[in-house]
Length: 86
Image (cartoon, rainbow, N blue to C red):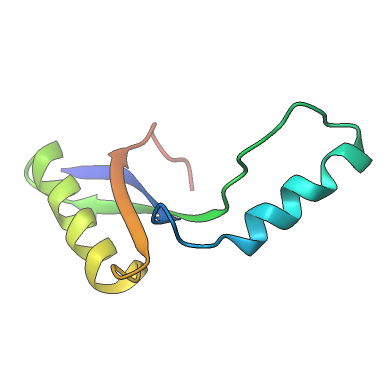
């Protein structure tokens, strides 16, 4: 079966996020007030052939840990997404 999976990669707590800080500083000039604690990250979307949802998420997690993220400074999480139309 084919599963649509989303992998989110974010910096670990305590790691400086200059991209998020730059975005946060720019928001008031663009008319967005009251927005704080902005964090930048990466999102990957993929289709995975697997026997079950659990197997698909395990494959995506392994992929994220081995290729898509730097486990020293980043956290990765996988979740099932809505049906993806290519």
